[in-house]
Amino acid sequence: MVNTLEKYHRKRHFTKTSEPEGGEITPYKSPIFVLQKHRATRLHYDFRLEIGGVLKSWAVPKGPTLDPFEKRLAVPTEDHPIEYADYEGVIPEGEYGAGTVMVWDKGTFEHIPEGGETPEKAVEIGHIAFRLNGKKLHGGFALIRTGKGGERWLLIKMKDEFANQMWDPDKESRSALSGRTMDEITNAEE
Image: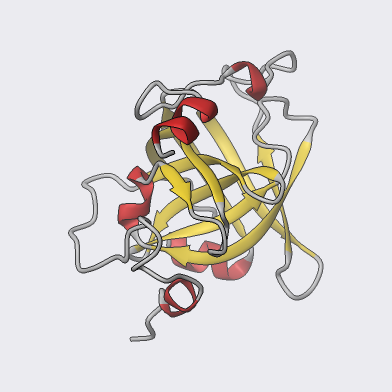
């Protein structure tokens, strides 16, 4: 089996960062998702789905939307260990992704197979649909690869009872894990 965390490990010095190294852990009963707000070079959100024993990850520059008519760019990043779902803190200067990380939302997700495929196969194909049951996000979403090479995906909210064109993620300023703001997380580490 290929170590899908190899790229994650190559980018980090675990003697300098408090990010989890990852190990052999038992997957959750229901697969989880996490959406982390990340103030690095640019503020963005990292969307992660527990698939195949790791967190498959996409950077979403503008964050999530509940508006089914808006599509959000999602750029794939390296797989992360499942333990990263609880990571909240400050990645030190000089380290990859330096900046503050907040667990903005967390919960479980249910894959919606379109033809019986597994979540792994759906990601490989480039179209995975799922229902989120988080503290902030609920209902149907899809990640869809656009173009060749797999470098551009779209995160789309499905039309359902949780759709809301007026919703603004910036008004949700507290961590789903600790209840802290980005500044409180930053200041706690100084």
